[in-house]
Image (cartoon, rainbow, N blue to C red; front, side, top):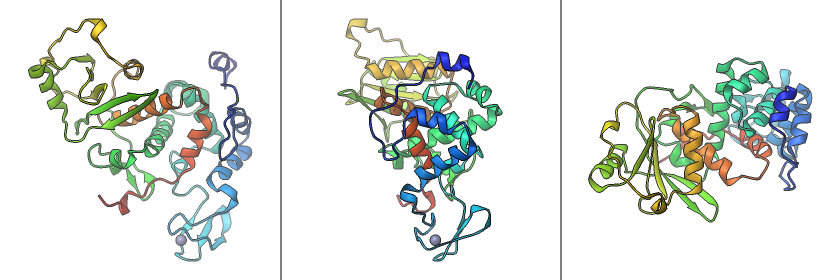
Length: 312
Ligand SMILES: [Zn+2]
């Protein structure tokens, strides 16, 4: 990392909270100085207590093979140390993952990260998308978010991320509801409410809509502080009706303003990618004031959910 970057993005003070892995951001930066130290840190997180098990059947009778691989005595599956985990996607060396997580925690853009890490934009973007998927997969409503309403689960096959959601192209436009309560934020995928219906509420029932490009957020609706969606050309944006509300009567929550400003800075997020960005913002907001790096590494080191064995 360059000196200029460090000056602009000072590291947070070491977190006093104890994590299962006992890490703080300074240790992560130190471990990122060599591939060996970085790999050891990641292995310690993946295999807590040093106990290894088969990612396919969970069995712990394993044989060591050449090249650091293992074979399960039960199901005969052969695997390497990071098999089946989020961190196994993207092909980055261990030290690059640690540096990427530090940069992501400081809200660097993918372009800035690519420059700092000496990687191509595409490789960096793929790794960042993996990180966003890992965050989403740890949300309480991950099961719903990886279901058919977003289409995101279709990218997970055999505990691997296969392909990335499109930056354009049509698909379902999910509608999300933002709930802010006691300093916590919950972003729900609102089932059964289409983007067209939100536009209809605006047109026929004067639900206030604010638009920034394809991003739309509304005035409070039912239990939600706002509905939010990021659509595409298939939606009738030209029919949005201006509903004047005096600023004193607006009840826009702190998080809604925070989220809208950040999403606007991305200059358009496709409907397919939108849930990943929203869940990242929910994560950042609910962990504000904490060091994010240890948590992000723990998420990355967790297993990718096995979508093929999920039942509705
Ligand atoms: Zn096995």
